[in-house]
Image (cartoon, rainbow, N blue to C red; front, top):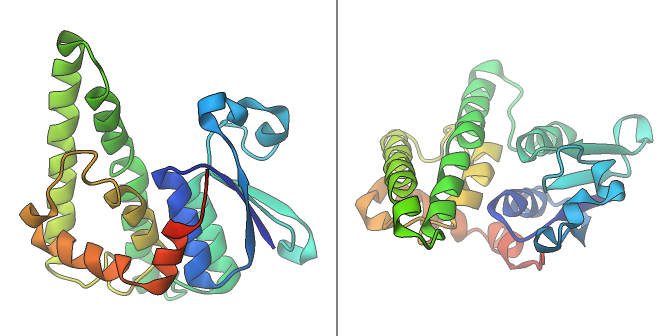
Length: 207
């Protein structure tokens, strides 16, 4: 059994989608970040950076429990654990890691900043940050669109990289992206969201 400690955020949805796709049994343990529950000592024991999500695998390596924090690390761990969505062949393995790191380093942090500045009420305080991060958000969607003009999924075959990216693409309306402007992303998004396991991953209550 996997214990998923999370909240209803893009990073949390990455893991619920992956768990559903991999067919792993799991239980949800909500961490209400609006009430600072991520700072509780019991959560910090498994996520020292006080960020969700984190997991505890009660049947980890050698049959012993293991905890994993950081959504990218969790996806890699689950891929290794199940042998799914993370190919062993190095030539196929590398693009999965490339696009996973692309999401972790850009298509997430930059979009999150756009979300932040969209909520800033003071127009003067908002102006520079919003212009900067909306521009970067659009650039990243352009990168994704060019990639998906060449391949069906980000690493060729569907992988943990797609699960990472869908968690944030799910919020495209919030960061003011019209997918019609990025037709290859739109095609990919609709294909991913039509998968029954992905739908279950988004439907399960995380808050």
